[in-house]
Image (cartoon, rainbow, N blue to C red; front, side, top):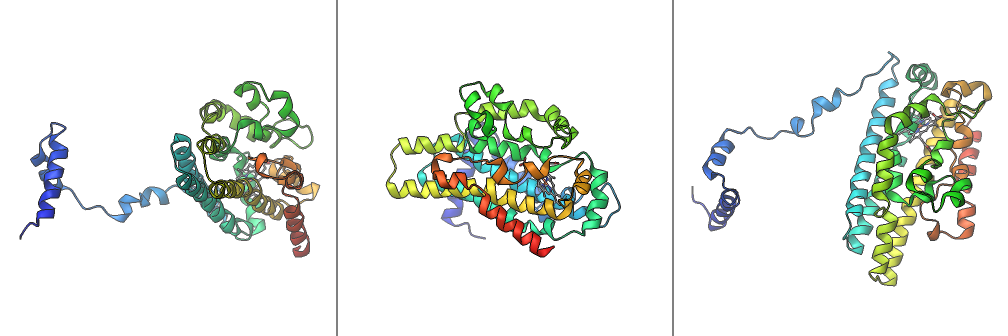
Length: 323
Ligand code: HEM
């Protein structure tokens, strides 16, 4: 068999790469001869992946619940990869916008597939296995919290009622009033539910670390840097639109889809509240109550005042008509 000049060049470059580190080229050639070919199942770790679903009951629909949560966590991981690429800095306007759109695509995919949860399980089966999971809740998803810290200045995700008071405080002090501390509270007593206690015990240090790390390199900070470096009006609009979409995806669209699902399974009758361990989710989850806005500067007063409202009303109407 003849070796083309291009192939010889490639081999020489490879040899150069290996020998420049003081290693022996021939050892590598021998190794390649022995190495087995890559295959799909090892590459994607299929056996491991398929062994990670461990239902705690024998209720038929429980694997759907586990698998969809795992799918979501993988999408969250994809979003974190993009957030970290943006945090690393030095991106062009085009790269920055594209990376924000990647996150938008991931959240779009999650929103579009949430029917797997909303419609895809029998309500009585869900309620049957839900009790066996207590006190676990998606509320304990640390990736979700880290995504928020990577997207926006911490002060914007501090509870609205505390924001002015702690605006100039340290990261630690601001974190004490992060909005989600108002969630997973016992409806009757207002005390943190065990699901929140457990979560904070396990992850508080990691969350403080993330808040600290993203303070000067979250998506908003990097956007500000790009603006300062000088961008055209068209580029600015492109950037703003990508960020507006991100704000809506993370803070309205996904949460509404999720809320709608919680309503379907957990109902709104006080007698059903026990199914969640008695938490205040009905007052906490709707975006119009949380009013989480990553980028308030990109919205008008009217849009901020109406945050999540028309959507929620529409969603609720849809639910009421359907039930
Ligand atoms: C049938 C499906 C689901 C139901 C009924 C449900 C229910 C709830 C409820 C009631 C809460 C409020 C906290 C609490 O009281 O425990 C909550 C929070 C949360 N859930 Fe779900 N959930 C479902 C699916 C999911 C999925 C698939 C995910 C994906 C990881 C998820 C992620 C979250 C997150 C991140 C929170 C915190 C939201 C926030 O703080 O604003 N949930 N969920």
